[in-house]
Image (cartoon, rainbow, N blue to C red; front, side, top):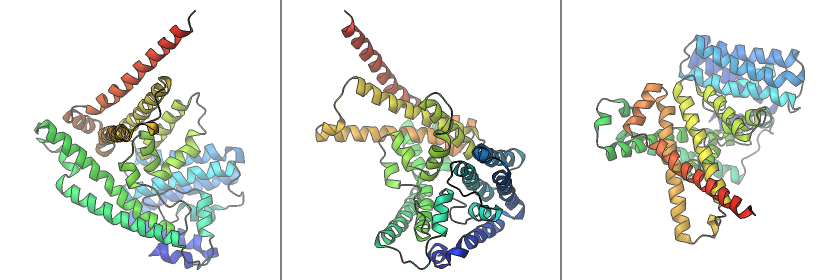
Amino acid sequence: GIGYLLPSVDAASRSGAAGALGATLVALACGLRWALYPLLTTMITAAALAFAPRRLHGPLCFAAAFGSLAVLRLCDSPPGAANAVQLVLTLRLASVGFDSADGGLPCNQGPLRLLQYAFCYHGLFSGPFYPWAEWAAAMGAPAGVPLQPAERRQVWCAVRDAAITLCVWRGVAWLTPYARLSEPGWADQPRLWRLCYFYLSSFQFRFRFYACWSLVEAAGVLCRFPHPSNVSPWECETATSPSLIIASWNVSVHRFLRAYVHTRLQLPSRPARRLGAFAVSAFWHGMHAGYYLFFAGLFAMVLVERLVRAAAAAARLPDRSTWPAAPRLACGVLQQWWTMATLTFFGAAFNRRGWSETLQVWVAVENYGFWLLALPGGGAALMLLLTKATGSKRKAP
């Protein structure tokens, strides 16, 4: 409802109204004490933008945003809503410095304008993240302009996806609640039962995010944000590679990591920069060991994907698009199964969060994820070695 009414507010007052609403919601949901943390982080960022040389805005604002997040977690235990607000605020304020250094943010933006951006209500508790330029475009859009047919269709599709994914989540969760994985005796069930239950419970766990982000997408379209979508449920669940999962899940955080971390890390290789981006993402999510285990597993999945692609190219295998229909379909099904089964295994670390809790689940499902990494990864590595050895023999006089 707010997303529908906000565009009717005059453009000169819209950013102030959205910021005031966000600040009010933070105070009501988190309490005044927890509202001080994001306020303090915003003021530190405003001071860096006002007094530091422009070339230093990026690293200073990044350090201020992520440093405040670290202090909050190390010195206190924020409740869920307060932690969610600080997560989104960290991305917004960290991006501002790099946008300023790159010339994408005018120098005359004062603390009030920064507060309006930081506390804009849309996505403040759940994402998506949007940079300053997209926020300014939404807040400055002409008032009273009706939605275009494509925008109305996008709103309808987002609401439809939210309803469907909510029903799937609640229905499957009623049959296979994820919390049962930690109950005594669960690991003593038959192996096939454990594997099927683990897969289904992890499946429904993802759908809670789909439902939330789909609803927020509808509000983002109504508010005229250029990139309101944060997830594509169908693309996620039918992904045939880790790269497709990464590109379809939590899209706005992926955009942040690519624009403000991956491309700016002064590291010698692309895998090293990717690992650095995953490390930043793990830290941003929390201090729990499970987050680092999950992103380490995701990094290993991407490495296996790259290794298999390199082996196929070295062996000069024909492109899959040229295969007959039946083998092409079978290969796609196998790739999708491998991607989702491996993601589900390492996703247990993200969902359980604790070190011992994660290892307990992994042991209960026979550590199958490590085998799914080793078999294609080892096979691809062996193929690369054989191809290289064969090529060397052919070149020898």
